Amino acid sequence: MTLFRSSSKPSRQRGSMENFLLDNEDILFHLENMDIDRIITQKEDKFRDAKRYPYAPVDIADARDSYNKVLSIIGEISGDTLAPLAAEIDEEGVELINGEVKYAKGTKEVLDIFAKADLMGFSLPRKYNGLNFPAIMLSVAAEIVSRADGSFLNFGLQQDIGETLNKFGSDKQKQEVLPQLASGEIGCAMILTEPDAGSDLQAVNLRAHQSASGQWFLNGVKRFITNGNGEISLVLARSEEGQTGARGLSFFLYRRDEHMKIRRLEHKLGIHGSPTCELQFNNAPVVLVGERKRGLSKYTMWLMNSARLGIAGQALGIAESAYREADKYASERIQFGKSVREFPAVYEMLTEMKISIEAGRTLLYETARFVDMKEGLEEMQERYPDRKAEFKTDLKRYSRLSNLFTPIVKAYNTEMANKVTYDAIQIHGGTGYMQEFGVERHYRDARITNIYEGTTQLQVVAAIGGVTSGTVISIMDEYESEDFSHAENLHKELLKARHDFEKTLVGVKDVEGPDFVTYHARRLVEMATDLIIAYLMLRDAAHSDRKKKVAEIFIEKMLPRVKMSASFILEGKASLLANYKEVIG
Image 1 (cartoon, rainbow, N blue to C red):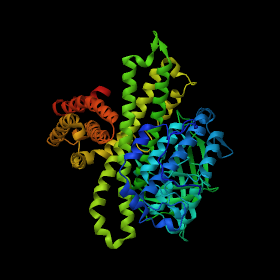
Image 2 (cartoon, rainbow, N blue to C red):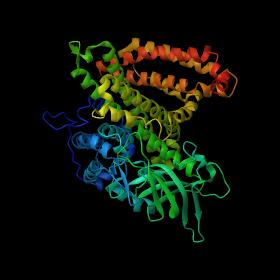
Image 3 (tube, one colour):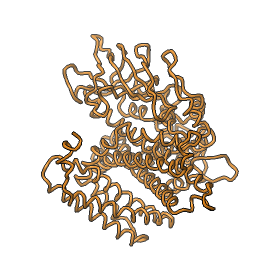
Image 4 (cartoon, rainbow, N blue to C red):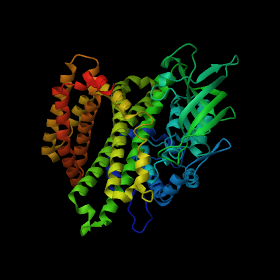
């Protein structure tokens, strides 16, 4: 392990090569101001690892410094090496040769760099040669890497499989697999989707049967599997004969062998550097992870929530790259005697792009903070079972918040990235439509983010319960306990929007009919998201006059959005519900 310590914050060194951490003032702002002391305390558990590992932190300040150092290394690799290779990776793509996937040359080169820098075990415990970093730092890293190449996150920093196995696997499974993942020696995949089971994973039909000796075997087909050629996989399969639905599914650890064939690679719109595979299992031997019948309800749902947080970071990074290219082009493109950036129609687009990216960033970090608190409290309960009652109330609270915020941030950031990359092409005009310009690639790469690991529509389904049951109101009440004296007028405007939202929540509960809330679910979730982001921006504004201006613009544009949705929900006739069958046939 090559990490080093110092007491300094990340510095912007003039003359240094491009670094995707150090050139991002907003990420640096958040690293300096984010509230993570308790997360560090839980993660490090009295900093006991410092006695065993020379790179483990000795206190909170040392942990923060380690985070900054590692993120700076990732920023340097991303800016200096990965970003210049991204166009070549996209053009070269991946190939299936004699049943094996061949990565683009640039992908392999950067994977080797990540492995040599000891970055592949970013979130794994140190006893498995990982760095033991929290989710909030993984979110930062995911954005940085994805800004360089939208497809690379599916290889480098793919922590979901390792984290899931660390949480639910046996000691033997963890000892055999996690050090190999942390070293970068092997790749990994989560194998869930089938031709007839996409969003509806309860319909999974890949069969798992157990021999007389107790050995499990898989038979069937999986489709749309990202990095399905990985040596280690977590597989969702039907283990209970005759049982349909979620209760018939279990979770399995598979180490790739001759009993699984990669039948084809998908030809995709974007993320060309990442292989998407169709797999055929032919009596492939596997090992059960955890308990039978809990494959979907417990293990897969945890895995997917972790992956969704990563995709929110991926989308953010793609959007950041597209915005920067659009801003640069608009500054340099001269029309009618001045730069395009000086025209109100263009600088309004650029301003909204930047504000929406910063909104997604503050929302992502808040979500990751809740996830880290939840996971940390669960770990503390396991370490100290006699103190279980002490952690119970907090754990229940952070579980509710992480379950609500994860689908919200996945929905917001991925839809935002699609809008930002769309606008980036528009600002470039005809040149942006050409493959010679990066924004065309960003637009293609962004499109998958609001589809895989659950479409935006499914994120709304996952979030609406927390919106209507009171979880959103409770977190807003907590935000209200903070000091907003630095932005009193903006806070008053926010409260107007909150009043409209709460009135709408009361109103929808009075409407009879099972489809009414479902029909308006996306509007309700988007109203809640707007309000949450506004609170977070007011919090950020306490540390920066510029952030106060950002909050002012966001809230000014949020007010009519919330009011319009409230009016449509409460005063509209919901004519679509009555007429859609006649309209679409």
